[in-house]
Image 1 (tube, rainbow, N blue to C red):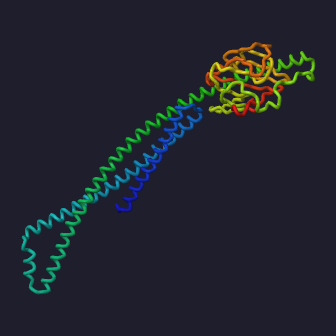
Image 2 (tube, helix red, strand yellow):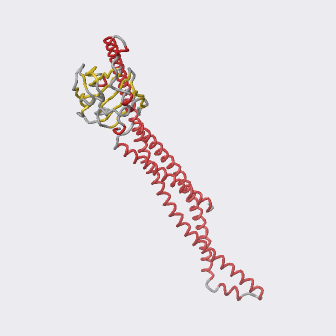
Image 3 (cartoon, rainbow, N blue to C red):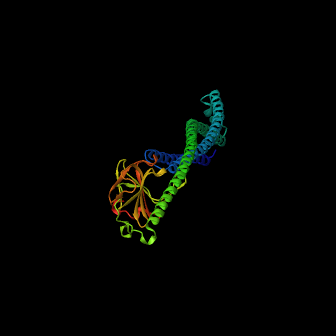
Length: 377
């Protein structure tokens, strides 16, 4: 085969090797990210996405290895064909050269001289000399061609061994990558089951939260109805101890960091949770304090809220303190600003220890974070 076609086959193999190296580097980076993800808290969605990307990269590696094998196989066939052609030509040249050697041996070392000296004229002498010269050049070319074929055959044999080793290595790599692909597919299936189970648990938890929220809303509504009946009419309502001037100035009920924020939150499994308050992470047993003066309207368990204290601040305003470990006040107790109400506990093991805190203004929930001191956020 022409050198140009051989170079084209080698170029295809090299291109496939470069592509394989690029995909392998991409997959290694994804595995590094997955390893880092497994050592930190993360969303299931992140793990699912990385698994899918690893699966895609490994599948592309298997495809690239298949393409590389095709290119190597083509080059093996080309090299084998070239080797066979070179060996056939070499065999023919050796046969011709052997016959020439036999003829030279039979005629003896003085044959050329005899041919020249037996010429009957100068013209015949010159003609015989040219003939013997051409014959010598032909014999010399034949030996030179045999040397070239010998070198080519050795080179092609070395290349063939290299290509055969590449085929073995390629098949070994493909077997490993196929095994890895199978592991990733099993991991994906396992992850899918885990996500489905997590979604099921989350939906059940959301249903419980909705029930607890409805109970809390009804409870606060009943407090308001009872208070209005006691006062006789809305115009005589006592003013709230929580005023608009307190926005951004209230002390935090407990020092900590946000676990979740007020409003809607999309979970990793695509379910949605609406929080009527904020979650503040804090160690179990941390003291929880009132953000403003008020009266304990409720102190006890409240479904998914866990142990809960509800303070009435007047004017239809309430603050809610949920997920408590211990409660330090009783219903009807008058409390002052900063007075301990209880300690942080765990209402949901999946969230850890935290305080669930709400502010109700005239019934509806508002974002408590807007009322707390910015410096403590």
